[in-house]
Each structure stands twice: as structure tokens, then as C-alpha cells.
Length: 95
Image (cartoon, rainbow, N blue to C red):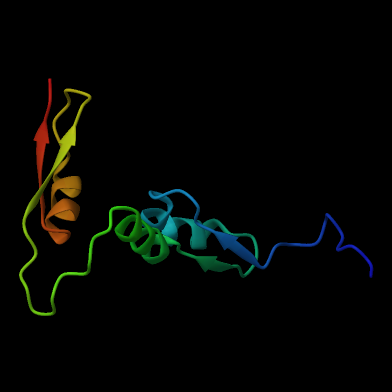
């Protein structure tokens, strides 16, 4: 069986860091050819639940509001706060 050429373009890319899915629009825009993107977020979340021995919240139960902390001492940007709110999070700054 012949090995694929190292110069052949990739057809799939795994977004292996948790922040890469937030950049998917930009990654798609700069990709030099069509690429399939694999977002592992759901699999990571399932794994976290299994490691922590948690069960999924019952259907229809409200999400408990959480808090995200910025440790740089700088304020959250308005766009960041809007994004956090979409996930039920409020932002705080730790000095």
C-alpha cells in the first residue's frame, strides 16, 4: 500500500484545542482548499461527565448560572461578555 504524499492537501482537521471552535468562521475563510472540520467539544463534555461521575441534567431543568473569571486583571470586552451570556455565564475579573 502506497503512503500518501506529504504534499497532498489535508481533507480534515480536528479542532483539538477548546478555543478553536470559536474561530471556525475564520479558519474556514483562510483554508486554502475545502477542509472538513471536526469539533470535539461534545465528546470532551461527555468525557468530563464520565470522569466526574455526573449524570446529564434532566430534560427541561434550567441551567444554573455560572461565572467565568479573567485573571489578567483586565476588564472583559463587551463581545466576550455577550458570548459568555450565551452560555449562561457572567464575567468577573480577579486582580
